[in-house]
Length: 123
Image (tube, rainbow, N blue to C red; front, top):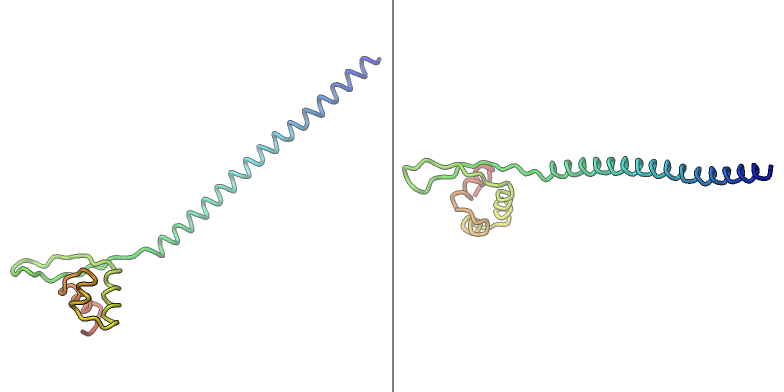
């Protein structure tokens, strides 16, 4: 009878010890699952934010037909980046002359004049 009590006690202790390991294993699995879900949600949030920032920073280029310097040659279309256009307009508002704007923006004078004309700025 004493042997049965010891055997039952030993089995009980073993089962209690196993129950701790089984609970921890399930808990670890739940923690990993929760962590992966959180990681997925954060990645989606960052992707959405990145998309918004890209849309805000998207700058379209404006095509302006430049006048040909060489006679009898058709005018070539050159895209002028919006940043350059804004720089030309800002320099003009500050009172710079066409030749000074041309030097500062690294654009030919004809193109500076054309940008100002397309934007309706009086020289």
